[in-house]
Length: 135
Image (cartoon, rainbow, N blue to C red; front, side, top):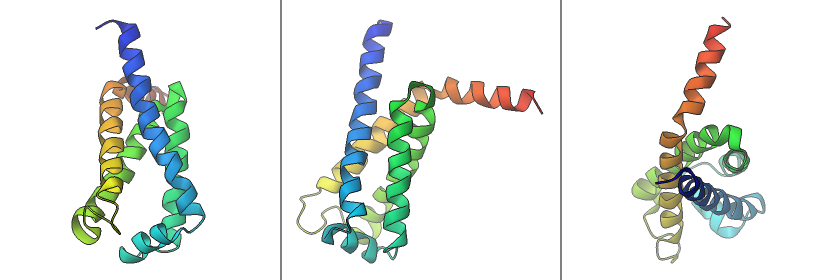
């Protein structure tokens, strides 16, 4: 696969994760009934809803900046691991008749971020080497 094709695939993965996380921010920050229900069910309403929304915003921005993709991917992966955990333990795959849409979105973001984290791990390794070289 050529570098150009790889870059296109990576941008598609970045956009999938960023768009899904960004579009859910409106619901978290406006305290939509579905968001309040979800975070109440898992015992994190309201601060968990707001805090996770802020972290998803940060992950979205990091994913869109080429120098910080790996950080956004790792953060996004962690956030979606939490979402998937709660879907599988307390919420169920289907939440309030959504036919599993939120679960599917969390899974798409997790997989996209996992691929990005693995393929951009050199960014993280280089940063850590530079940081520890100065100590």
